[in-house]
Length: 489
Image (tube, rainbow, N blue to C red; front, side):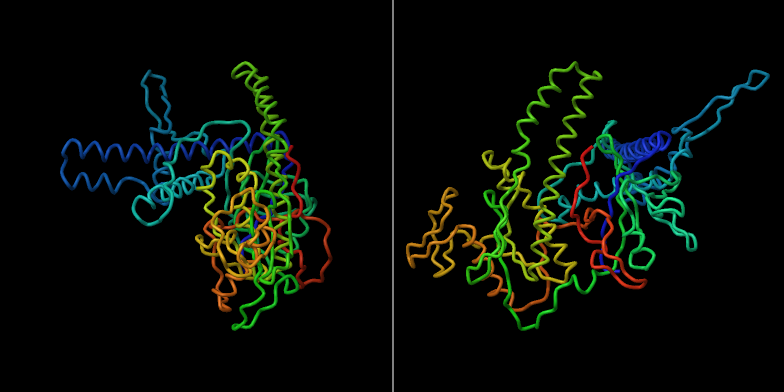
């Protein structure tokens, strides 16, 4: 088992199962908010003791009592949910004597306990991300402090871990009488709309092991994302290993707004050119009309909620279209080239330009780099990131002369020193390929992209018929990447 991937299916629950799913989403939100409240109250007690000038022992004890990690948050919440603060009731005997019975959180048995634990884990990660740059453990932009989650009817999620008891797992895909289903703890068997044959085949052959399942409430849809630990891709889908002293074969990938991707070799050969789909700009007229419809409705009315649902469905459709296109481009790049070099773009800085922010966000350069990085790793290829200060666009790919007065409207690079005339994006891709051949020297170590950091949790592809395989063999399509996006609603 060498990689993690996720299979995402659209659920088709019954009315009773929809109520149970909504109850679990609310429980996850409640546990997250309660853990955050316990954390803030403990910090406030610690500050109060400092202001009052309490002894060092009491201050240290209060500081140690602040739950920060996921384990301490889980313990704090478990202690609270059984306490009188979580719930109590008064019992009156026949002779008129009232007694207090501590019930704790009365409804905690109606949902899976894993929902509470995973909510505390999420808060622990948020607190760690907030403290890391402030304590010097991580460089970069600071993140905000975790905030309380509000109750909504169109979003929310909860997570469950897979626990095995013998040969039986708590999270299973397919049953004997219904293959298109997912079995979850405390929820039972829930029907899914897509075919699960590929995932079931991988699990049966021992090429995949379920780790966890995340259930998400979308716009009038429920989704389940099953994260598995899968084996490497089929050998026919992986690139052949290159000799250690081979520094050739690099292909530069230039990302832009007019042309989303332009790939080229060192000799100036263009291998791929893809125009940007501009999904947000295409649907902007409809988006503005839907936003005006929401603002015209009476606040907090049913009509405003319906108009907001239509606007949310439009945003989901735009995102799905963009994701589907990015997966197509990244798949084409990693399947045809075993060595790719990307430019290290300061996307955060570019987004601060109000004239370019919307177009850059619509192009999704960071998401494209993330997909290329993990997919190339799956296929056994290499990805390197050029130096951020390397002027790939302003440098002549023939003589190396730098043209400092090059502007964004100049789509053709014309060198005044050697007379080279070449497309601007192809010239940048050629320079990136030359930079990789001059600086890698055949190194096999894969260099990560800062824009592509983080675990891969949303790489999947729609389950279909696919090629059949014999028992014990691996299909080239096993745990591949998305080739189709489900409808928004």
